[in-house]
Amino acid sequence: MQTYRSWRVFQEDGAVNARLVDSSLDELKAEPGVLVRGAYAGVNYKDALTALNRAKIVRKFPCIVGIEFIGTVERSDDPRFAIGDPVIMHGFGMGSEGLGGFTQWLVVPADQLVRLPAGLSLADAGTIGVAGYTAALAIDAMQANGLVPSSGPVAVNGATGGVASLAIDMLAGAGYEVHAITRQSDDGWLRGLGASAVHAPPEVGQRPLEGARWAGGVDSLGGRALDEMLRTMRQDGIVSAFGNAMGNDLPTSVLPFILRGVRLLGINANSPMPLRERIWTRIGSDLRPRHLDAIAQAATLDNLGEVFQTLLEGRGRGRFVVDLRR
Ligand SMILES: NC(=O)c1ccc[n+]([C@@H]2O[C@H](COP(=O)([O-])OP(=O)(O)OC[C@H]3O[C@@H](n4cnc5c(N)ncnc54)[C@H](OP(=O)(O)O)[C@@H]3O)[C@@H](O)[C@H]2O)c1
Image (cartoon, rainbow, N blue to C red; front, side, top):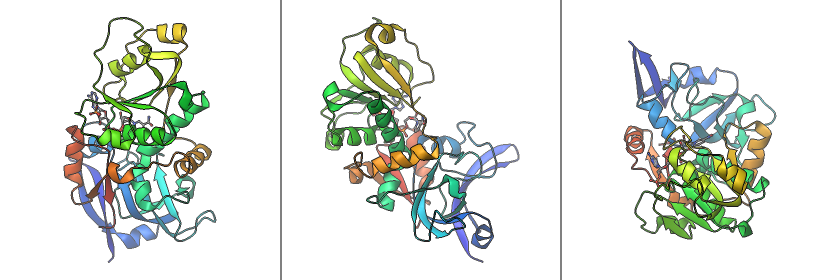
């Protein structure tokens, strides 16, 4: 019997456990859909929460852990995909409703696959993943609302994180003056990605409006950090909010909105397919990150357990990328 490996989460005797298991490839191949051989899957904070059972994310057990998956088509029942096509899948309940990305093989509905744009290798896409997609979606939304490089500086908080580091790389590449805000000490890594300056998180001020600094803001954190960002935006500044690494609350006032015309854009990466295809095309062209080698940290299915722990302890930087073929 041919087997393949995947990280699965089980509900057993009232407990939730995740582990690396062998499964029958013959049984998987018998399922209808597009058969994809895995190449890479980036590791996201949410995956660590799932695998270490720190949040109720899984809605259908057993579930393969992982919210993204990159590979090549090995068999297709759909004319849109041919053998050998490089594809990416994310969203659509991946990692919570059965299918997940930390697996060597997957059978996927064709409607949920995006063909990688020319110019992006499988390894590039592994480093970019959902994090880079979210960064590009945020930048695209800010630009649709009028943000251009001449608008002024753009602040990116939680700067060493996956989404934020890719946002810094993309924004700098697109000509923006990027200011990284991080709790980490500055060892040159963020400047290497393109940040013009690196700042410690500011003391949260007491005034409803603080000195106007930023034309754009990219927020991974929520909570007091997003409030601080809103209060330091310039007239007509644009903030994209996609994360809650600091918290779900948003203690703020309406004054940034009604006195400075600040616009707050909500970003959800589980986009409809036409938007996904358009954003991935941009990631392969004008928003292509230039420092993927510096952002990627190699991982394997065998050491994924340690990676989950590292992420939960806040010791990650950039993106851990699992090579699914090893
Ligand atoms: N809306 C969506 O569709 C979507 C898509 C992708 C991700 N997300 C969310 O976006 C956020 C960022 O994702 P990610 O993958 O980039 O996560 P990540 O790699 O874990 O990065 C988050 C960064 O936030 C900072 N941080 C973490 N905990 C913090 C705390 N308690 N207080 C202050 N700063 C803290 C850290 O940066 P420093 O140490 O540099 O300060 C960390 O590197 C997460 O909340 C994630 O769930 C949402």
